[in-house]
Amino acid sequence: MVVTLIVIGVIVLLFILLYNNLVGKKNQVANAFSSIDVLLKKRFDLIPNLIKMVQRYMKHEVDVLTRVTEMRAKAMSGQMNDTDTVAMDREMSSAIGKIMVAAENYPDLKASENFINLQASLNEVEEQISAARRAYNASVKDYNNALEMFPSNVVASLMRYQQKVFFEIDAQERKNVDVGQLLDL
Image (tube, rainbow, N blue to C red; front, top):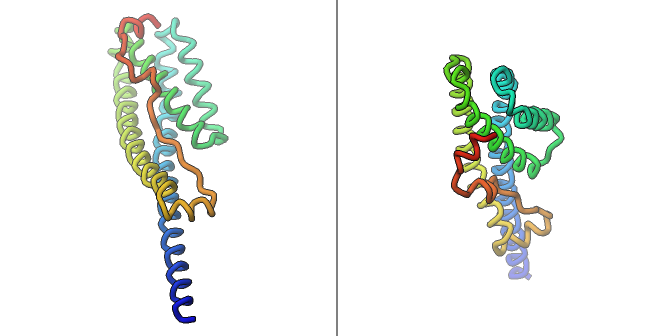
């Protein structure tokens, strides 16, 4: 009888430890994601200034500017889940990169002090987003590992925890950049 109670006590204690560990990892992922979310909002707040600044010069890049504006509106709606946010971040980074490369074709724009300040602000935010992505991905790795490793996978399945997605670049961005093609926007 005493041995049975000890075994049950050990199992309950193990369950509690695993449960608390998983909850901690899940909350760490949520915290890291919210850091990215705050930085993405900061980036989206800079976009109207970027659009206003470059519209005067970039008549040929209307499609890119329109798409960036649409993405910002969708992101600001607050109706995106984690997976949508990851995909939006990937697309927005690409679009902003295209705008910055296209700006090279407009010497007056490049020389504008407002554009230089805006570009510096965007670069700073992009660096912060990059650092936040690394922290998020580290948290996701720990969390996803806990969901797959025994014995925490048993507790995770009881709690119906699902794996989280990583912030990754798509295959297109892994290729070498053809600067000539980017300048032909």
